[in-house]
Length: 221
Ligand code: DX5
Ligand code: ZN
Image (cartoon, rainbow, N blue to C red; front, side, top):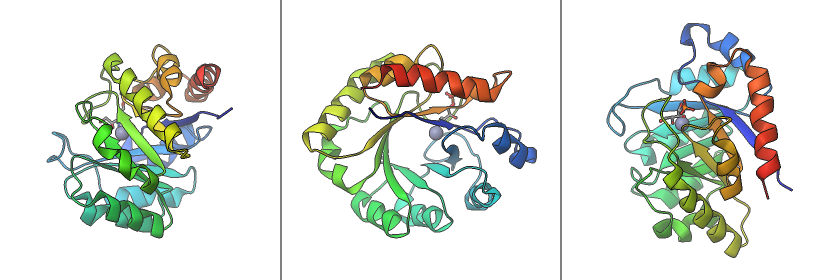
């Protein structure tokens, strides 16, 4: 049986207290850091220096989610900075295979993200080049939105495509993941769960992480 990975998104954390905020979630498996450029998505966060600062705390491995234009140009630097995984969007990449190979060559796991309206079908041939597929379960850009139930069949199709190619690839879900939705995502085939507001708005982040982990575990195949 696979074990779930819990990846708290620090999108809405207190950036002035970055180190304390990472400590607050240190019982998680990896920390999810959202990079937004105000072009690919209508919101702006931070870039390489802040992600590097997260890596350098050494508190948790870092999962960089790049919601940016031209990831072919920018993504490799996040691998070079020491991120454990670097996720770029299929819709923004012009050379996804080359970019994924470059990320892996630099020692990080490579992941391809799909917005809600992007299907997995055109990307099935790229699967052997990546370590993870991120199925967005909200429109990327903001935390605190509702989980899109309509993404469940896409998670299943992705799981089936991975299984029929006999590959070992994680499926990450990001957006609206909470106690209310994580079981359905796990049932559909997700193995890696990003949760922002569910964890940062909880009274006790450790307890929330433990609860999400055990709910997911019960529903994983
Ligand atoms: C949204 C980001 C998410 C976001 C999730 O575009 O990619 O990682 O922080 O936040 P919640 O869990 O609140 O939906
Ligand atoms: Zn994200």
